[in-house]
Image (cartoon, rainbow, N blue to C red; front, side, top):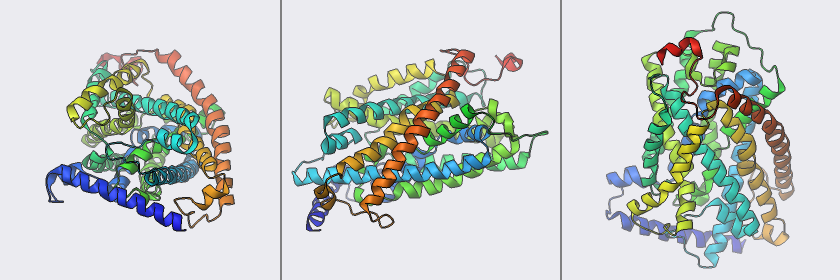
Length: 470
């Protein structure tokens, strides 16, 4: 117990030091200054807004499509199941971060100008092989997560102006402005606004679908095929796998040891957005959604819909920044610019990260299917399997368990139970998420490539009867 107390004191004193430096750097003693209010966020509330805003973005528009693939009941059950699963593995990541940071604080390592990342936590706790695995999966997932945001922008803008071709060029340029945001510490106002935007969109989808009512001859036959069922299930796995940036969000907090249950609280709020909207749209349009991966495409044109489209576009810039910022950090460390205080110099050094993301978004214009492919092949390992395995290996020895920086959670106060839960997660996600989900989503993805082709100029556009708009 004494070592745990010492560890806590060490990390708290270090964090207090960091806070003092940050407050000095602001050059303004007033905590309530405009700059502090909008730019410097490190509270528990900032972390909650970051998690909730980042977790539900453009997937809000594809969840009705998933419901049509797997049916209403399975859709709701799997949302709750993967939401809880995601919250648990986010908790494991937070525990490992505190463990790593506590050990480093004891060695008098300072993190004043250094953002700790997930692969560094794995390196410090488990060694270089785990660092390589964590870096490969995390970077690849975040790379494609950023690509998905650009594709989503191109898909959504069609519902406002269908005469724009190669829209990804426009949004690639807009999203490149995220290079000027130094870290998650500076996303305070964006996280707040982003969550407001997704909240509006979710309730617009719900109310618009209920007001529209069921279309004539609506059918709800899902699930009809295994390949569709597991594609939908994997999209839901992807939806609740947004905690690949947990470590960076924690590091931006003034007191990261308070993070433990924030992701769960964010997930509970997200349920109030995803479950009603997906259920209402599926109830109204049924199996028509099988051919409409973007929920906007079936709702009638109105000022309310235009507002939702515009808000989701703005939110996608924010989510792009969330996905890309950890990649910026990795690149900065590679080129030796991470400790540079000049925002402009860091921004210039980050540009090579944006260019390949832009290029990939132009190659793969498939809004719905790419979510499931990324979910099964990358999210399954990045935020479910690797954290569970890493936690088990970190605390495999009796001494590691005895000297753990964090106590066991009150709802699971047994190491045996924790190992049982983690083992079950690894097996379930590997077999169902990676195995069956990988097979289904790749089958669906390849089918989309054959249908629409690579480098397509028009993303998620209606078939030829509507081609007169072009």
